Length: 172
Image (cartoon, rainbow, N blue to C red; front, side, top):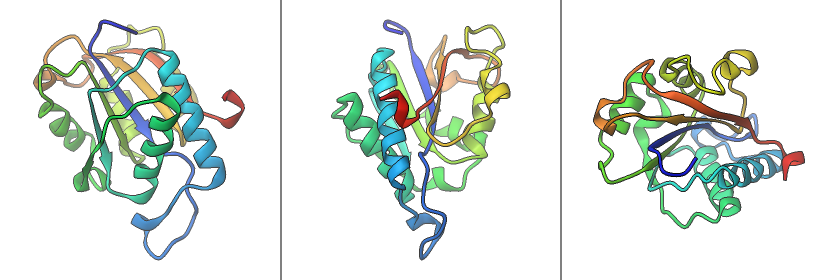
């Protein structure tokens, strides 16, 4: 997947069901292993983010940490409070702010937004088209899109789904 502009949409890994607040929920052991498996897969695909937008919730920050560790990414993420409760349009607005010299963006957020965004972006022509509809968007899922134009112009049905994977510890 080298030499093309990529947008990677990630749902956080498996989190504990309860905490003092929803924002404070952390990953389970399975979630940490699954997130690392996803990071290893992304690295094997040649994904090297120039920018990462990560929700401020504990489970998304921890997902980034284990994913980045497994992928050997040293990039510090942009922790964004708006990703916690936004919809697909809100995520696109954030992506639109990405500097044009960035080749790859990773967004780590929550469902239903991440799954809906993956379906919304798909132009229907990519090698992985249909995977999100078939498999849903479970924890530790990543949809990798080739983006044809500037970040400021990313819009619905205008990105090619070139990869889809659900990280599971057995992958590692």
